[in-house]
Structure formats: C-alpha cells, structure tokens
Length: 164
Ligand SMILES: Nc1ncnc2c1ncn2[C@@H]1O[C@H](COP(=O)(O)OP(=O)(O)OP(=O)(O)O)[C@@H](O)[C@H]1O
Ligand SMILES: [Mg+2]
Image (cartoon, rainbow, N blue to C red; front, side, top):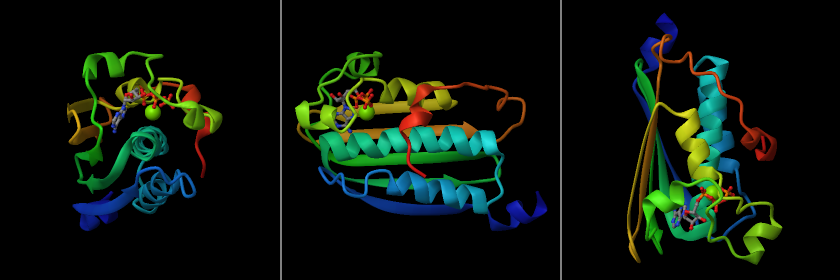
C-alpha cells in the first residue's frame, strides 16, 4: 500500500476517434494495464475495465471524437469522458437497459444491445451523465477504494465482449 500511495495521484488522458473501430477497446486495455501496474485489487480493475470499455465504445459508436481521462488517487478511481457529437436527447431513456439507437453497422459488430450505460452504472459507485444535443456528452464515473464500499460484487455479461 505504501508503494501505491507514493505514486498517487495519477492522471492520464486518451483521445478517442469516433467511428474508428480498428482499435476499439485499446484505451480500456491500456487503462486495465495501468491499474494492474498500480497494484489495485483485481475486482476494482475488473469493474473499471468494464466501465471504461463501455464508455470508449460509446464514443466510437456515437460521437465524432472524445477525450477519456483516468484519475487515480489513494481514495478513488475516476474516469471522465467528454465527447463532441450528436449528444443524447433523453439521458434517462438512454440509461434504460435495451434502449439503443445503434445502426446496422454497429449491430453487425456486436454492439447496440443497449446495455453499456446500465452496465457502467452497475459496476461503479457513482456515475454522472449529461449531454447537449448536437454538441456532445459528458460522462464520469468513480469507484471508491474504501474496502467496505468495494464489497459490491457484481457479475455482468459485458466481460464476454471485452478485449484484453
Ligand atoms: N457518447 C454518446 N453520444 C451520443 N449518444 C450516446 C452516447 N453514449 C450513449 N449514447 C446513446 O445512448 C444509447 C444507449 O447507450 P448504451 O451504451 O447503453 O447502449 P448501446 O451503445 O446502444 O449498446 P451496447 O452498449 O450494449 O453495445 C445509445 O444507443 C445512444 O443512442
Ligand atoms: Mg454502448
């Protein structure tokens, strides 16, 4: 724990190119590697990787470009994603399991089940989603490193579609 403490706080930003599926999942893989290197608990890494993957895919699927920032402190892990794109008309509706505006191309690639945002909500301790139509979307989520709060074991089918 002393070693981890010394290296905090940590932050790193990644660019995400909308519409480019070639390296889909590469940012969440990098985040996963960083968290492993930081020596974080495996359950925390697993939950953060799921949420980051879903957030990355949503920028690729629905926005023009975005920036994903990873923040690590001794108390929490936080990811902030800001994108420029079509935005979300009804955030509450977008959060509902099964709601999706994915087109045929996205569905052919195995996405568009309408599960991403609800998965992020499930695996994180806090989630904030705001959007301005035709401007972009702001998403942030946090996992607390307090062991009591981390006793939030969940299993989700999202794992099956992650790379890395
Ligand atoms: N960054 C974003 N910009 C614009 N629209 C978004 C964004 N993220 C999500 N949405 C909208 O919210 C809907 C629901 O997103 P969610 O991630 O839950 O499901 P999905 O991406 O459609 O499918 P899945 O995540 O299961 O592959 C999307 O279909 C899209 O309409
Ligand atoms: Mg999604």
